Length: 99
Image 1 (cartoon, helix red, strand yellow):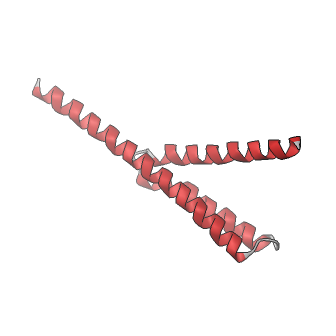
Image 2: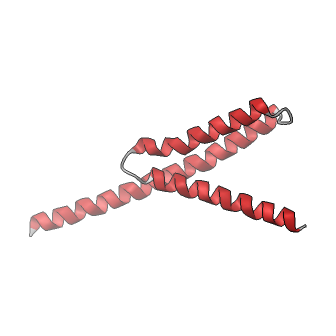
Image 3: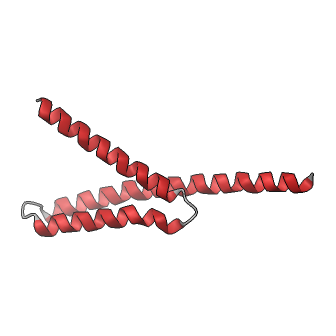
């Protein structure tokens, strides 16, 4: 029972860490940094599908699609934060120019 809880906790922390890295990379100036984690995710899932016989095609498609959906949502949120921060910076520059 404890092993199952630890496995669940570890996987939850792993997923939270991956989404955190995706958010940080997506909120940077370079928009393409946000594509790193989804590409690694698809490559990893495809490698697992090809090399592990017990993975069904439906399972692969559902897990990859759900994972990409979550990663793209984080990418969108990171880009929105970047745009908001950029707009705040432009407003500060405009205010300084008016003085």
